Amino acid sequence: MSNINSEVFKLLKNILKKNKFIFYICKTIKNYFLSKWIRYSQKRTIQNKLYFRKKIDEKFLYYGFQLNPKRKIEMESLLKNQINSFKNNKTKGNFMFLEIGSFLGESIELFGNILNNSEIDFTIISIDPYTKYNSEKDEQKAEMYSEINASIENNYLYFLNNISLTPWRENFIHIRQPSENGLNMLKNLNLEFDFIYIDGNHQYKYIKSDYELSKLIIKNSSKYKGIISGDDFELSISQHSEIGLSKVEMTELLQKSKDVDFIGFREFKKGFHPGVTLHFSEINDDIIKTESGFWYLNNLRGT
Image (cartoon, rainbow, N blue to C red; front, side, top):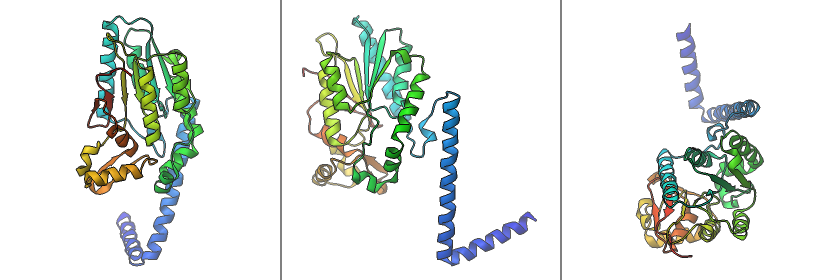
């Protein structure tokens, strides 16, 4: 009986393939209901996790992002090195950690767990306005951006839920403000930080502002210097040939893409954040960039 059903199914499939219009309609209907079912299933999963007080991972979202495994190792290593430097220099007070851009809190949970196991007093501060952050160009190119913006209030709720489950939640402060406002507030409070991680809006004007303001509040003495690091520096301007462009073409692309979050090149299986690339092409600071896109400022000098 199963063989007969299989043959009937193949016959129907061949008929549909010959009539491309009917095949297209059937495929569209199937994809529509499949998409509806996936989103319904995700919604129910998230509701259950909130009710039972469990973590909501990026994988449960339609547009979920997962932390790159290589980047995760690099992030862990850099923070641990800075904690050792903090201990060796017998720096007084709390180890001050700042994250710009939080999303669901995956990276800050990684950092927070390391700090919590390091036998030091620490304070974690994050800045994220949880408002629409993409330009109209981005929304026209990818549905994902519209999805993120439409559910931004939910994302904030998921973030708070995830932080509330951590053992270091009482060491945590969140500033729901645009990063420029939040960073200036911290500066006016005369706070200085041991470690800053920048992963906010990647458009040119925002990464530039986040970086410059971070340099004003990082610890920077002759005996002890803090670390400024960040995410999504996938391609430097000198790597223009990796996406089939000359340096002149790359420069022109970067100038045209100041308000674009991400550009992908399928034929080269590469993508990058043009605002980040442009910003670091304009400064002379000693930036260490890894293959995963993680970066940090080496040899911090006077600001």
